[in-house]
Length: 167
View (tube, one colour):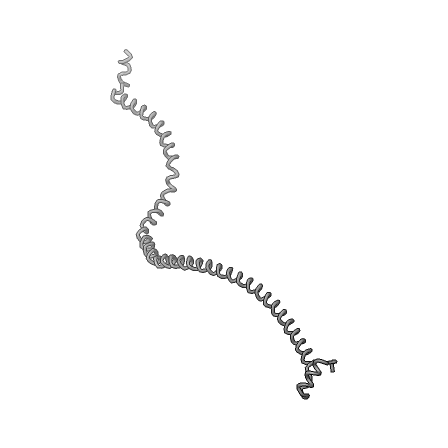
């Protein structure tokens, strides 16, 4: 009887199934909305990455140009590398020469010390010789003072030397 009363209101079964599917889809949309919100929150920082990616792409397009510059610089610096090895050789050589020069200077300092000592000894010897020469000179002067007058004869000179009273 209820069926009879509801018959004019009767909705086709297909419509009811469709409404049921719509209701189920609406429930799914609610869950999808939450999921979409979560995905949107996670992907928001990616928007800032696009300009950075574009800049990176610009720079990667310049890589061949940069490689050309690097290659040219490498060719230009090759003589500098050779020059550096020559400078290192000169530095090593100068170091060795400075070491040998230091040894020579040390030796010369030792020789200078020896020479200073020897000169000091020679100065002492020269003073002794000078004193001896001065003594000899005094002796010669005393002896020449005692010699007879050269104007007198040899006998008189000999007699005067033997009997000399200091005249």
